[in-house]
Length: 95
Image: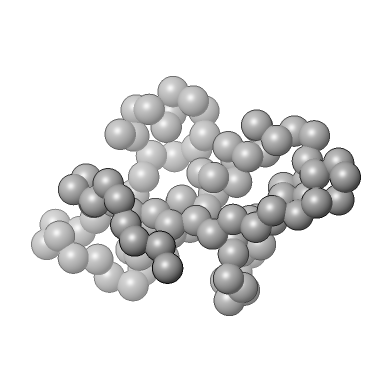
């Protein structure tokens, strides 16, 4: 829900899919980028004492994670973000 995103002040609403229900590569990239940006901003707000780096902020790096968090003790956490615009897809498999 785009309203919820605006409520918590974390950026623009999720981009809409094309009318056909299928997405172009450009739409998939926009939705993926939106998800990474959303999670990055959320973590910057909730992990203020840690360093939060959005690895793909400028361009896709090909790394197996999108965000890296380094806490005050130097411990690293790696986060891979998955985003969907489908309302009927509430869970997905992770391997």
